[in-house]
Image 1 (cartoon, rainbow, N blue to C red):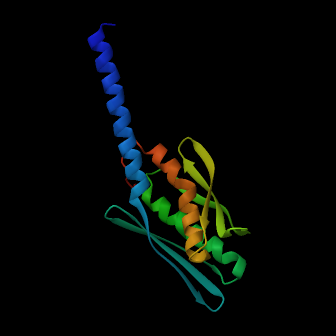
Image 2 (cartoon, rainbow, N blue to C red):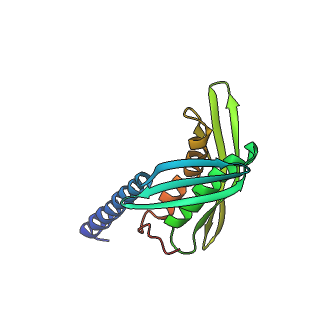
Amino acid sequence: MPYEQQTHAVSTTIEMEESRQERIALVQERIVLESVGLNISGQVATATVRLRERGRVVSGRAVGRNVEPQRLSLLGDAAARALTELLPLGYGVLLSGIRPVTIEVGDAVIAAATLLTPGGEVTLMGVAPADGGVTEAAVRAVLDAVNRRLAYLFADTPLLNAN
């Protein structure tokens, strides 16, 4: 291959990689947690999560029994539903498990989420410190589980909802 063609091929490859890296940064930055709520009314608990992707706001909601061990699951389910609203048709997020943990340096929440894609399922793990309480940490743990994978999957395509 002549030198000019080699130089052009290398330059094009570098430009494509730079573009891909810029896109990864956009995806990682654009899903923002706007609010988390847990409304308790008698025996019923309702979790709501609002996420923002650039100018678009979506929300997820989960309703269940008002029992302490189930509240984190409701928060994680609401986060997964909100994330699914952001994803293209054929993609989704399901909460597989969520648990508070305490270690020497403090409290945290660990979440396992299943990312559904047209090519199959991937189980992902995330963790978030519970400095501000477990309510917000539960949602942040779900976001932590899927953020890097979403950046990888959608680095070359826009993140548009068709669900």
